Amino acid sequence: MNAVSGPAPQAPALGTSAQAVSVRHARLGVLGGGQLGRMFVHAAHRLGHRVTVLDPDPASPAAAAADAHLRAPYDDPQALAQLAALCEAVSTEFENVPAVALQRLAERGCRVAPAAEAVALCQHRLREKRLFASAGVPCVAHAAIESEADLAQPAVAALLPGILKTATLGYDGKGQVTVARADDLAPAFAGLGRSPCVLEQRVKLDAEVSVIVARGADGTIVHLPLQRNLHRGGILAVTEVPAPGVAPDLAAAAVAHACRLAEHMTYVGVLCVEFFVLADGRLLANEMAPRPHNSGHHSIDACDISQFELQVRTLLGWPLVAPRLHSCAVMLNLLGDLWFDAADGTAREPDWPAVLALPGAHLHLYGKAEAWRGRKMGHLTITGATPQRVREVAEAAAGVLGLPPLRG
Ligand code: ADP
Ligand code: MG
Image (cartoon, rainbow, N blue to C red; front, side, top):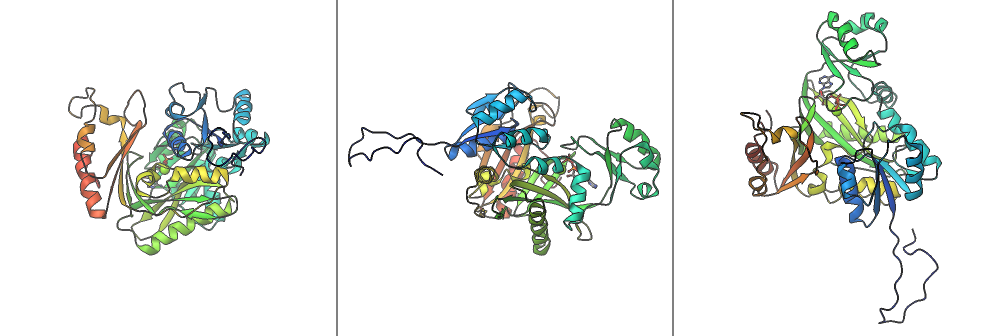
């Protein structure tokens, strides 16, 4: 990549400072302006790049940090043309962006990572499960429920008790209903608007883990160490790295599955694969995200290359080097619930000074103007030399913030 744009300048005489050459900054774009986009902007800025955010929200957390904000819907043809003119390379921060928007940008000559087809695949739980099967990655027993008639299949009753999930647009446990008995199926399907669904067997989880990989256009693939995740109410609450209580062979299998999935899709970009670990030791793929993931936020403070820098590197075709975990880490998600007093529900500001007084505490707040229950407002990463130490400090932080104990 050229370091200088325009005609080659004449070499200045040694020792003079009269001449200047213009510096070339990569012009990057991101679809979506939430916290993931904001952390992408931070990583891109650190490398000297310029970033434009496309997001209809005037209060976008990413746009507040970016160089430019195109305020328009993701499928607005004019805005996409403008983004393509402004940017040489565009990524996405969430999978529910219309895949066709990425397609349009690619057609206009933008480098796009991940590609529209990969995003379309990860947007759809059934397509995703078909990919797991074709890549030889085991996943939870399930059935497609695309109409009322599908509910009567004998195979469906065998999956109960189960979880009915909309095939598209679900996140943070939304678009899901637990179904205990066959009689509950029809009302649950109606409650989800009779949109195409997948019914999954509800499995008994011993643990949840995730793997974040980054794959370059040249096929180079690197990954972050396996994360162990705790969800509360369908939303990620705690991530621990190194993953406690996970056997090395199981961790290696999860990493191998994630790499195989990225290769199978000839994926370019950052990909997160979530897995269930069952009591009998089985490892099942749950879902994929075609982007950095909440379970990789610790990498900003605990790794020498963060998942967001990996996103920038894959986008520009820059070298991928395996990130090194230099510290043990516990990440606590900070939801809007923390802005409400636990006793009487009145508004309160969490005690940040008390949190920041803890050793190894790295506080990230996303700059959102309003808090509500379940809204992701920030995260806190505790780093330290040993798993025991970070766990102790994270327990103390949870106590200060009024969060349940780590394994609670
Ligand atoms: P989302 O897109 O909302 O993250 P997930 O499918 O990952 O949807 O479900 C959210 C959480 O719900 C999971 O992390 C897990 O804790 C629980 N869950 C989902 N599916 C199952 C299942 N089949 N069996 C048991 N628990 C499940
Ligand atoms: Mg999930």
